[in-house]
Image 1 (cartoon, helix red, strand yellow):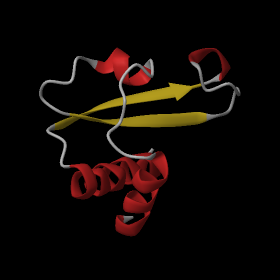
Image 2: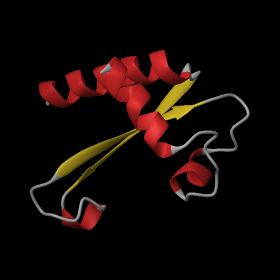
Image 3: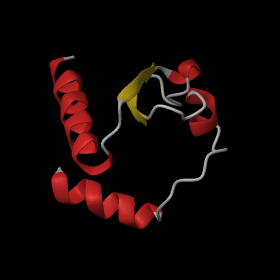
Length: 81
């Protein structure tokens, strides 16, 4: 639990440096039926949010276009991690 909390805080800190969001949605999936896909697996989503973005579902539902290439986002995050 402590490791997940530490990694979540680090992810939020990194995203703040790269994308300057106004807030975050955090979601955790544990177990096969929850969406993690494997019984002993747990993972967490850290979703940056800005005033004016519609809501959580358009981002997760892939209906919102990001204003940069995914490779650029990955490079920016890696540089600050």
